[in-house]
Amino acid sequence: MHTDANIKQAGLPASSQLTSCSGRADFADAYSIDLPEAASHDAECIARHIFKHQREWIAAPLKLRDLLVLPFGLKGTADLRGAGGDRINIFRAFG
Image (cartoon, rainbow, N blue to C red; front, side, top):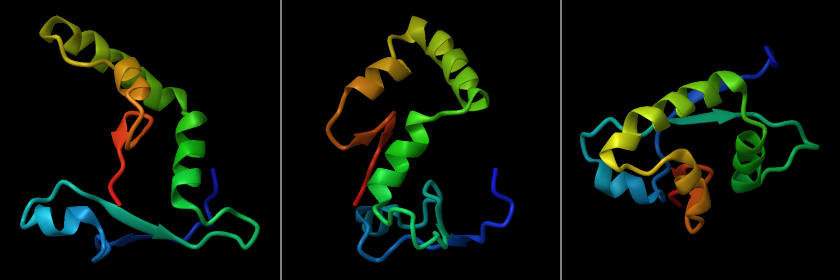
């Protein structure tokens, strides 16, 4: 893990689809980080890379979630990953 990264909490971009519908709701987080020059600056590419190489401490609670929601007929992480469309892994991506 990089400890020298300058990660800052940021507001939602004005052009984000979430900005107009979030109102006073506090369900969206936004952060910024300075990337090295050699790094990709494509946010979708970076997100796909992060979720492709998921840590076990993230995967384990998701497995537990799948077991807990199964009796209620909710979609599991495998269903969400396979849904495609505007998803990156299990998360919907908003522009």
